[in-house]
Image (cartoon, rainbow, N blue to C red; front, side, top):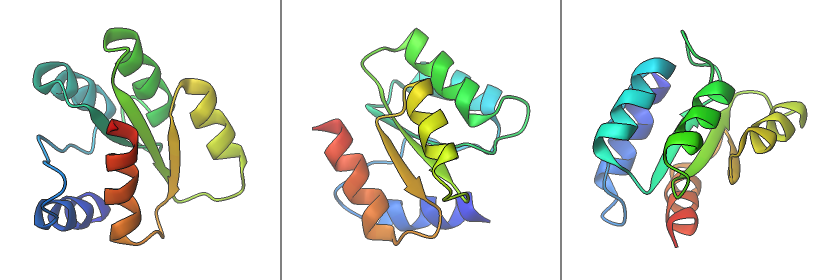
Length: 109
């Protein structure tokens, strides 16, 4: 449900272009390598391959890509681990739509 909501909101925002969406880490890697986005918004709680490993693999294959990690956990540990995996930005899932679009624009600048 979170994926559908964020995608719908971002598609309405004329400042960003959504090139794909998935709720699976392995598929996220395939999709990103096929579409070559500037920024990937990666949920840390992905099935098959979690967001930490997805982030590491994305950046190993596309070092210029920026990764924004997203999590429902806000205790600081998830953010530290996401940044250690290579994420440039960390957002709490409770954030507003504008935060997501602004973070994507900031990362791609």
